[in-house]
Image 1 (cartoon, rainbow, N blue to C red):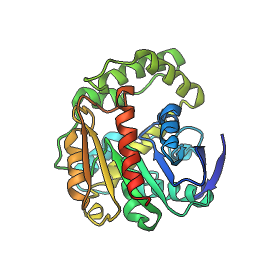
Image 2: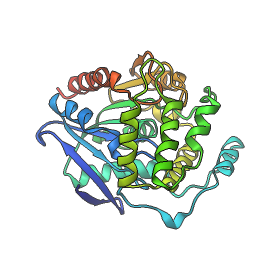
Image 3: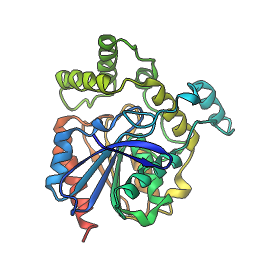
Length: 295
């Protein structure tokens, strides 16, 4: 796959569709590689008339790693945030947003529809108020605002996600299949074969859990984004699962409430994932939202 130098790092990316179509930038979540946006899903968006771009965030996949920063103390970061102190992090969500803009610059793209999931939704939000002239529309999926007053995720879901993953391949896959189970959409059958195949591919491509820890710290350091989000003027679609155990649906509702004119789509039975049973609905929602703002 190709890569570019952007914002002082190397970014791995892949594209789908006709370059003459409006660009749609897909941003993955914490610890996720660009292959979170599976090929079939990307191709469905491309068939709807978009030049789809997926990429590895810094510290994940095949993009630049920040080994020299070490592994952060997550408990210390959470404690500092709760006490209103500055959270030390290797980089910020602002930096990650600037990475995405640097990728667009390298590809010669002036404006793009921006769509992110979970932490990727947070990065997409930051892009929308930090670089508003580069954004045609915003889609924020299973994400939130950083509002400290919102309900927290279920303890068992949080514990599963932050638990250290084994480094041996088979144990790594088994561990993460169990993570998938914890955050899976209760309204849809668990797709174990898909999970195992995806996790094996992810492990073989890049097993790098320390990057997830630094990304998590960047999220904690990002704090409450509501004041900045209230300035977002681009057309915004917020998609959230009604049964999300990791980032409860109140996070999506808060996002839609804070961003002026945002439209909220709550998907019944959906957790903190994208089962194949929701792909058509979500792809169609993104496509319709983005097409309307491309006219």
